[in-house]
Each structure stands twice: as structure tokens, then as C-alpha cells.
Length: 310
Image (cartoon, rainbow, N blue to C red):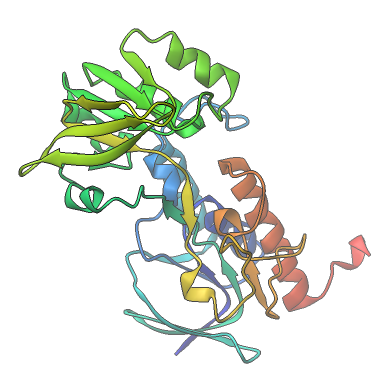
């Protein structure tokens, strides 16, 4: 069993930022991720508001973070399925498909997953017309009619990005107003390829081998509408990836991990950062902030507070 000062679960912006700080401070760090390094950020078409950087793709930003973490000494294992956790002792034991690891401290930074509508027909067409990633799948729908579900920043921004490929984009939103910043709303409203169906929701996805249409119902008057589309992109929020930790740390009613301002959970030596944590705002910059704070708090936990800061 290999031992590390810190094991970080999750290789998104929060986990990578924590790894950068810790490894630069000469702590031995292992970052484990059950998926692809970068987390949800790699699904973002363009990041335009990261301080100090010009607009770049989410994939590019995540790649730079990963390279920096490796250069400072982090060991990173991706696509490594988590099998079991034991946080009861002073040393934390984590077992994955690649082996068993011991850490003096753990940072949980697993983020979340796109929220689903929960329709049975949604399951049938996932990957067959239904997507949760504009960057990944947008070009598959070149010159085709598609819908985007949602009314937040992600839905509107990704709808605009999808107009680079699609013939038309119809935004379907259950309310009569958007939960997005004014600039995102304005960009969508001024795009000639975008149409809107407000106070509406999808009742069913239809098709044979692939998606060919959606049945929509107006929530105000019950009017049904059939749209002939080959693609549906769903951006209605996220679900924290906290299920595997529910018996280890305290969760909120929304299944977010509860922490204090130092990112410490209810379990000694276990910290949490990023979108899996209970918080109000979820941005790349807030994830980076969480990861930084968690790393500094872990160093205090492992080595005692910096005497210059007492």
C-alpha cells in the first residue's frame, strides 16, 4: 500500500488547484479521478472570464492546470474506479481498481454530474440525439434543428455556441424569465438562429434508432407542441457527486458536503472543495478558490499553522 501526505479525489479545477499548492509545498500528492482529468470544465466551449487569461476553451484551461500539477510533482490517475473508502482512522484508506492507497489527509473534489430531466424517454436517446455537452457533440448536428433545455447561464451560453453548427436552436424553459446574467440573455435574444419556448417543458422524446422529435407542453395553458428535431442539449444544473461519501461526512438536504470556511468536513482530516461542497456560487474561479483554501488548511492540519501567520 502506497502512502501519501494527501489524496485528492477529483481532478477538476478544485482538485488540480489543491494539488498544485500542496505539491509545490513539497507534500506528496495523489489525485484520483473516476473520469477524465478536468471535470466539468472540459465541457465548456469557451471560458472568457478567467482572470488574467484571454478567452480559451475549457479543455485548454484544464489541460494547463493538469500540466502544472504534474510539473510540481502530483501523481494523477484518471479513469480509476473508486471501490471503497475508510476514513475512520487517522490515516485514510482509499481502494480503487488500480490499488489501495493511504493518505494522511483527503480532499474530496469530485464535483457533480449534469442533472437529468428524469423522463424514461430521455434514457432511451442518451447518446442518440440527447447530449449534456455542447463542446463534445455540437458538430454532430451541423445544419440540423435542435433544442436546448434550461434557462441559466450554461443553457443560454451553450445555445449561442451551438448556433455555430445547428440550423436552428429552440430554447425550452419552464419559467417566463431566465436565471442568467443580462449579457447571456442579450446574446441569445439577439442571435437570429435562436427561438424561445417559455413556460414550457418537454413531456417526451421520440424517434426510432435516433431522436427525431420532442413533445412539448405549455405549462400555462396546457397547449401541446410537436417539434421535429434531431438533437436535444440539456443544461438544467448539476447533481453533487456525493453519494459515495454519505456515510463518511455530513451532507446537506441537497446532498452537498457540508464544510466550514477552511473546507473541513465533519470528519477529521477530510476536506472538501468545489461543486460537491455546500455553497452558493459555482464557477471555475470559486472552485479554484476552494481548492486553494483546502490545500492551505490541509498543510496546517498536517504540519501545524505557519508561525508567521499566528
